[in-house]
Length: 495
Ligand SMILES: [Ca+2]
Image (cartoon, rainbow, N blue to C red; front, side, top):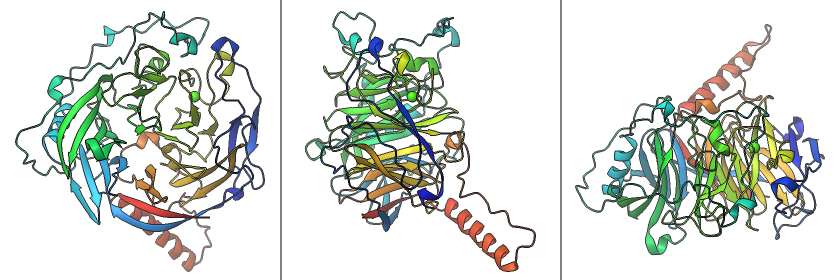
């Protein structure tokens, strides 16, 4: 279905890249732009998105299937490509990492893998509910203090969360029985979101063979640095913990920025108020060094917090000019695409979507309203050649937003329904797209509405036998698709 055939309401906010202090946050005009043919939302001309993208090019592309490889596991979540072209795919509830190459999916084994499973399968006692009393709600309804550039001053004395608390020393392993029995995927059950999440390849993998992994046992989460040797994880060292986790919304996205720092998303873990609490890593995007330390250029002294006020960021990516973007599904109002700036607060839980500038919050660049049938339900994000690709979970498609020096250009809806639910998405080494299907995933909570054009067809009473047969065939085809093993599907992008 072409974008022009539907009216997708997207609000785009105009604002500059200037970092403003909270008190001086300027309310800028917003546009309510119907996304029909010829009506394109833009940011202001002062918002330079990509220095190397022509402002005037209005291009559309087609995605041509280039290949597919079975991911070899159920409930896949994270995906990353090694320098040799092989993919690593995490299985969240299956607690596995698969090495996928040349039509083969091999489960990673080794002592490091056992360390990770030991963490995931042995959650600590959950703290008593009264261990951390919730603060009194502000009777005035005033939002909590956002992360403001002001708090970067050295005299800021507030306790600093996430100050690179090392995970347990025993989280390091370099020896032991390497015969790991094949563990069948655990039954896919939704109540506990413990397991393996995002995975990222070290930018210096050729020298250090390092891979980074986000893992959670449902009570706490850790970021691990793994040493990979073939299909063995010879070492797993926890570099950041313990991140409070919950039965859902644990974040888990991992990605290296162009600055070679590791970025991680942490969800609110079911406690929304923590997203605005600078003493908590929950509801944040974190930025850390390869050893888990807080870079000195972070907005808060000795803190790994990069931005605040997030519900549950699912993916992060950067454009050629180094602008950082992140997507997150909303609660019940709006999914968001945000331009991530250090020290900014993105509003959760006080508000979803835009309208927070006067309170010092940074509004989304795009919001997709969950109240209509066009929810994006973003699960993956990738940027290439001046276009931003969002993989949609319940929307079962890839949204492509052209990025120009003026902001967003043309918007396209691609691969609609072809592969079912889509999770991680990545630019391949040869400039194509790779997307990880998520049809066996358990993220049912992300499914708000069925996409408008994938609803079962209701036939009129006087439908012909041919029409009935066609509808039955279509339903059968879809059922087969959704039951098929999850795959990495690659596309070439053709202008
Ligand atoms: Ca927000």
